Image 1 (cartoon, rainbow, N blue to C red):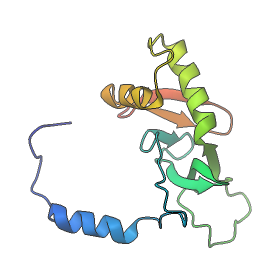
Image 2 (tube, rainbow, N blue to C red):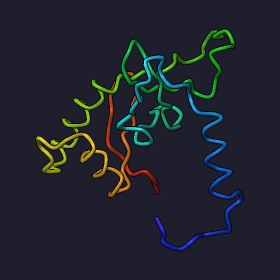
Image 3 (tube, rainbow, N blue to C red):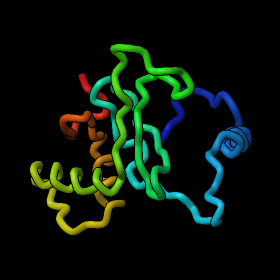
Length: 138
């Protein structure tokens, strides 16, 4: 991340925020705020896309549809969508960081997320396994 702008902004900050509010998911009916602690840190092991945040059975989760819309019927041979519950992913992330001797035992989730961001790391996920990788592989 650079402190200097790489290029002029395409839109003003106000326009960007307004567009984000228009496209944002609706808030829960109860008025609660949905929080996704690992947003932007999870990648699909198959297509390398970022997993998108979703609310599943009353809890935060992440998914990858591999560039397909759920509105289209799934054709033969198409890979199944990947779904990862956040609570399960946090357990996996703690184990992966422990294997790397990251010295984050007992730390809150936001500290784990900050560690990944600070070191430009992501978690690549598939149905078979997850692994910590460089966000910008060579």
